[in-house]
Image 1 (tube, rainbow, N blue to C red):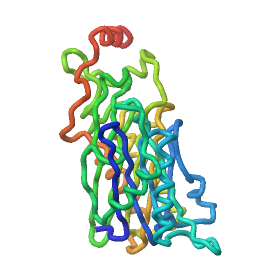
Image 2 (image 1 turned 90 degrees about the vertical axis):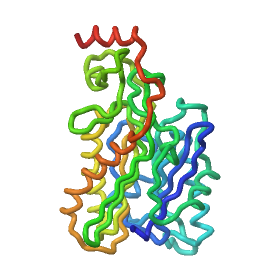
Image 3 (image 1 turned 45 degrees about the horizontal axis):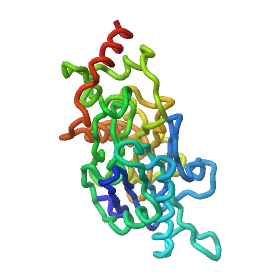
Image 4 (image 1 turned 180 degrees about the horizontal axis):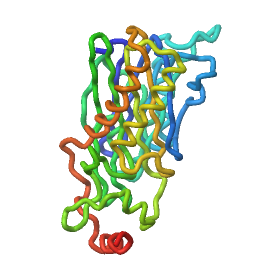
Length: 313
């Protein structure tokens, strides 16, 4: 499945950070949409529809906040050694784009560096849809409205889709400030002393908390569909509907939410089919990140719970 792509991970479980690399060594049409207000990104301007380069060789999803963007340099080195990249004249220049989420407070201050990015490339293989606390999700958490003590650990979110010859996969590192929901019901989120969910959206709307820019959910949609660069950007934009359905709240000023698209161009399916499918796949990928996981601390401090109750009545 999706044999033009390779997925690889580097996981620093001791320090709680990591990187996931999606390689298209011979190139894939790229797109991106950044909706969150606190992004840490690399080369996203290059993916705008009016820019010259259409194909990318890698998408890098990393922890470590802006520090973690260094991992892309290792991916550049790996692709250079393998003579992959955009023909710029005398030299090939690998087109490596990416984004980082904030996991610096999960365990220790650490971030995936150049060596980590290179190792993730070496570990990359076709159809590597492994789940777990790996790669970009090594230090990812959700439900941080009241701090890390009440946060819930997430795993790498994965959702695949096959219809006739069309193949799509979503890989997501879920590190939102809010809760993960399904059909309006909370799957993973803040809990009070009695074990009931508090509802992060209600807490935020009540103005009862002070937030930090320490979150961000980042994803890559890969497909064998044939897309133009304009269409890849349209799909990236629409894919955020999946975030809006699965994260409550999503796209806050304290999240750097971003979604990349890579299309290898083997199957004609029409963009409308993908606009119907992809948001659902993103939603399911986010929701899958909390299967069989436990919160770091199950309940919110009783004193904080009382303050919350005071604000919402």
